[in-house]
Image (cartoon, rainbow, N blue to C red; front, side, top):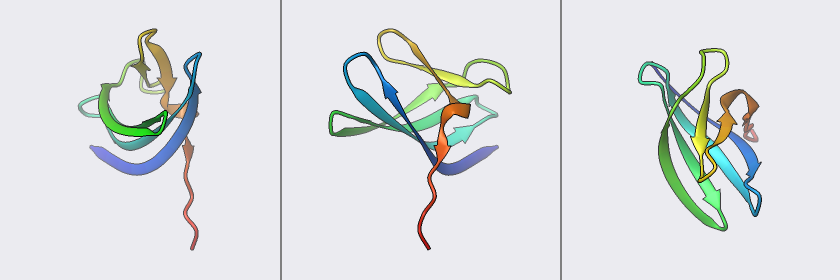
Amino acid sequence: MSEKYLSEILHFDGENYIKFNIVEINRDKREVKVAITNQGKISVHTFDLLGSREDLFFEYGVMLDEIYIEDFTQIKGEN
């Protein structure tokens, strides 16, 4: 099953703040598609989801920082 929505988190990697936006989560394949904004550049990557069903995360960067799905906040649009 695939879920589509937009949630975001800011992550400090020791040098810069990086914004992650979840584009899609596929729990069957245990993958998450994320738009990453880093130093003004935007890229889209797919990461493997790790951890238990209640505590899902993906690893990012050279230090394999754990980015937890539960830490993302839902972006609310204006009506």
